[in-house]
Amino acid sequence: MQVIQVQHLSKKYQIYQRPWDKLREMLHMGEKLHREFWALQDVSFTVETGRTLGIIGQNGSGKSTLLQVLAGIMRQTRGDCIVRGKVSALLELGSGFNPEFTGRENVIMNGAILGFDTREMHRRLEAIARFAEIGSFLDQPVKIYSSGMFMRLAFAVAVNVDPDILLVDEALAVGDLIFQHRCMHRMNELRQSGKTIVFVTHDLGAVARFCDRAILLDQGRLLEDSTPDKVVQKYRALVFERESRYGFQDGAVETVGSAAIDRAGAGVPVVQGIPNIDHRFGNGDAAIIGIELLDETGRPTREVFGGQHLVIRISAEFKRRVDRPILGFTLRDRLGIEISACNTSYSGRLLPPACEGQIYTTDFRFPMPHLGPGSYSVSPAAACGDTLKHDMCDWIDNAVVFEIKTEDLVYGIMKMDVDVLNYATRG
Ligand SMILES: Nc1ncnc2c1ncn2[C@@H]1O[C@H](COP(=O)(O)OP(=O)(O)OP(=O)(O)O)[C@@H](O)[C@H]1O
Ligand SMILES: [Mg+2]
Image (cartoon, rainbow, N blue to C red; front, side, top):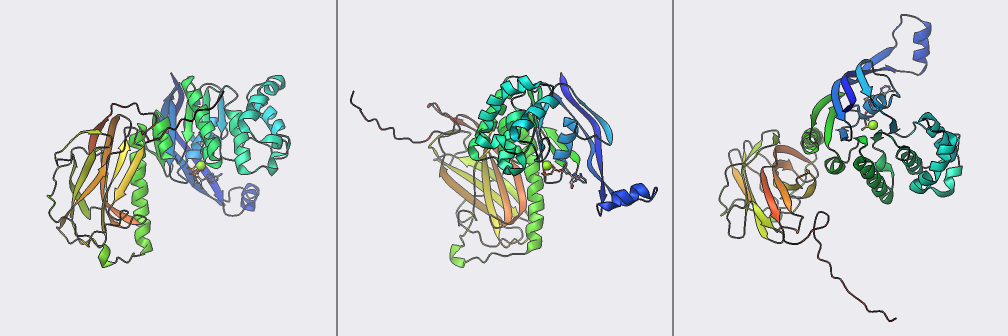
């Protein structure tokens, strides 16, 4: 069943230059003193019961606005928004709690809004207090709380009132690490018990790990609605594109010592052919023309064991002069989580300036970490600049997909080399 149905949703804000302009506008009927701003435009998507949807997008893209409409705190200007079931929302700081009342009083009042009587909320208070772990601050007015404390209490309430649908807006970032783990654990429990979750975050790893589906908002419009890894890829491409434009305007140039310049391509055969292209972007100053994953004997491989020595070979052709070329790759697991990445700039093996038509080939040699069995991918990139600031010439998502095999049991994402020492005790 679809518990959330959003159709052609648009939200317009009226922006006044000065606070009293709104009043002046009301008094002088007909005089328009505001400017209109569409924070959401024609957004449509649905969420099935028991699913977890991630919402990502750059600052100001409309995520919080969308969540507030879903929570029923704000009304849309156009379109439909149907939400079925009891909603518990953890929105951006500031909403929900009354600053003058104590934490305890706010919890009871919040419960009342959600339809719980005072006795029921008193019963739940213990679990909420244990979860929030803010000690005697529970009996202090919330206006003296730090933003982390505020969020801890708000989250504790939101996840302890049996919601059918939980809406969470980026709150986890404010908590300390222990609390972030506690929140994710609790959200996982809710998810496993069949609750529907809509989760706004800038943590792309969490989207890949945690969500069944994701949507990408950009300037109020829905750019992508797909699996988390596809949506995260699209978002990364968008961010890269904007960052490289910014970096270029900045014009900062890193000086390169000639000793650090490595001769690229000497003696290494050019590799041609890209096994897979999920998504590709870049300014076209260079094109990756080939990538291969090679075993110890130099043969292409798609089955790898932890500890095995491998080479990722990447060839790129430069379409115009590029002063500070970089070649590199990112290793991801099947959920799109970045396991690691490396490039020529980061590793200090700086490439000399490339001329138009020149082909550079770089070998990245490394022992494969003892990762859990499953499918992994390599995304190659050619760029211009340095690791921190660069212009993306060509990026290909998931160009090589391969399997990691293992005979060992791997807990978590990788097996660590752990020495276990036993000490005998008397008695
Ligand atoms: N009350 C308001 N009045 C006018 N404009 C607003 C109002 N609230 C938000 N906006 C504007 O609407 C746009 C979307 O804001 P929103 O808070 O939804 O973005 P967001 O995606 O949650 O951003 P962030 O990642 O920074 O939290 C922004 O340009 C913002 O300036
Ligand atoms: Mg927001």
